[in-house]
Image (cartoon, rainbow, N blue to C red):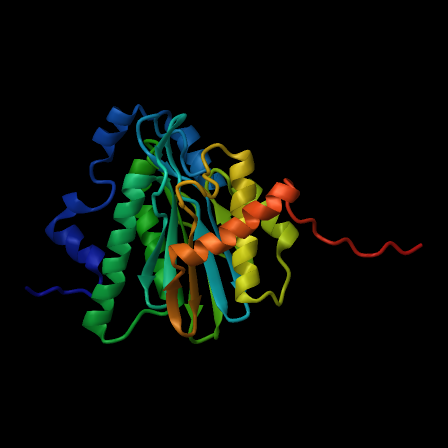
Length: 292
């Protein structure tokens, strides 16, 4: 019963290593028809989240995050794909990791969900044993170690890449961290996106984001970015008004983590859809006046 460490992952590695994410990677890769390691690793590093891992394994796609003066917002679409098929229309890819942080996943959905659950337990275990929470920097570092622990699976095409965000109580601001397939950790300012539609989502945020936006404005910018990603990337799902399936939106401030309800998220999503009915390309960033 002696844990011996405040790390839940280290405890599991000593007692039941077969239960860690990626332990069954070889068998899963064989069933999924994974392609060569070099291509999968390159996809993971570039942020495409390992779409080469085989046509039978569901993949999660686009996650966006952006800061505002009081904290940070993270949003994710709801579609998972298996090759050219839609595997699930309402999967959740943005999760609470503790009271002041959240994590989103892109890549092989099964391994990503295991990684998130392990990360949640890691933070809870540490808090119970140490009597305090990890710093936001410490949480980001622990997640980096988990991604690095999936390296052998990633080399077989089972790539999963997280996006981590939270409110830094010491600094009094929101922060965003991205990762590569080898566990490299990078702080992003002031927004970032991962997944197969990330290039389109990030381009949209570059057009729409400015300093000083309110929380509602940042949520709307993230919703516009996900719509743009879905417009150009078939693996990213847009708002499904008919089925009332909308992106998952989480906000972290000094008051803690809050996930918007489906009704709240739907309000933003429907506003974007109505606007796109009038202007399919979406809002245009204002240009500065030209001086002669």
